[in-house]
Length: 494
Image (cartoon, rainbow, N blue to C red; front, side, top):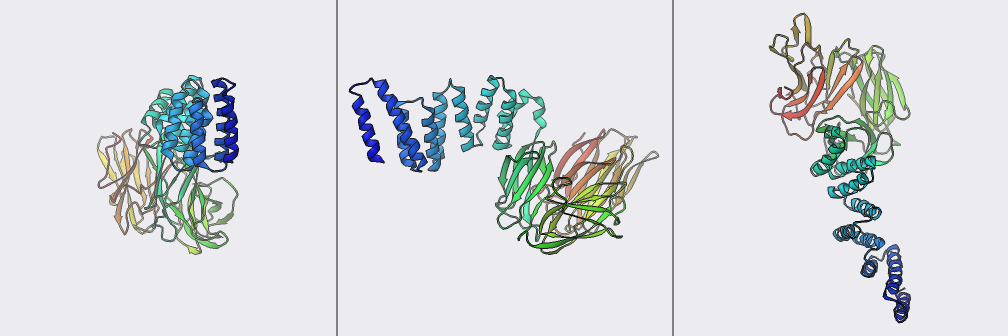
């Protein structure tokens, strides 16, 4: 091939005797471009670099030369050189928006964590009057750059729409083996999709302690969790407007989907703690999935509220339904053999504006306690917990500990009837047992009327404190805290 190129170049050089310099450069440009792209196609990156550089020398405003040269540098793992040549190209093509768009898009592909490129690309579309496209680019920039480096992007987004100040959250959590529920899995891939799209929205991997973190726009998503040797599954999540949103610890099952296992558990009443019979149970693939995809199995609880399901090993959602109760879901893990104590709780429908707060957790620690601290109409404070289970405000029972569970799993339930607009603080205390709040798999569900209005998973990255400050209700609205501390926090909503 080199001999052929040498002959062609000799012919071009002969042309210099009969043609102008501009015509020669034009001819050389075409030859250098063809040679460079041919070498690129043939994966001969070193030669491609030589000829794209030659092309830039004779035609400094050939965008394909810069893009081709960057491609060759990336292929040789010289990412820094690729970025340098594309940034040079941005200066060369200051007056050509179409080429700048192409260059900026390639820069973002090479290194999606540089905020400046999103800002420049968005500004081009803003100058063109395409605000929707600019916002789309800035949103992706916030997600890709992450929480620590996107302040300039957020500032521009908030100029375009002030509501963006509260529209991003960090989704974080743990990935562990289902076999013991605590051993971390390193290198698991967490891929985020919009709930109504198959296009990848964001992704990350779990680290050496099984934790992951990704910055996202508050919205509904489908999360796919996968790792070598484990069965992949989906988690359907709806993110809340808070600084950090914690997912339930992802428990991954080893083995093949051709194997099967049995899941057993009990569905109890959140109001009494007793098993509920004749609850209809519907099973779908994935977690937190009450309505997507096919129903895989159905069953009904027995007179003690117990159920048993044999399924291919993997991760599933159990939807529990019964008349006069609020529907609830249980995330199942099905392993070879029997995986027991996969319990759930359903709450009777509430009347009026009452709130019901239901705490559930795993086997360890064995005893978590629910607490509410609030203010009565008289201005005095009250504290409801296991030693003081009910509080009246005049003739109204403002707060009642309906169920106090001391032997793992829960439910532990509190019902609230608000009588003032002052804050009512709800927190969880680790009273007894092995493990920590971070390993407890604790979750809190908040109901009002016949609706689940909020759900919280315990933070897994905030140390070994014994107090989980979950939320406050102020004037009927939930204020999220979701922190783990060494003492109760009952002042943040004032």
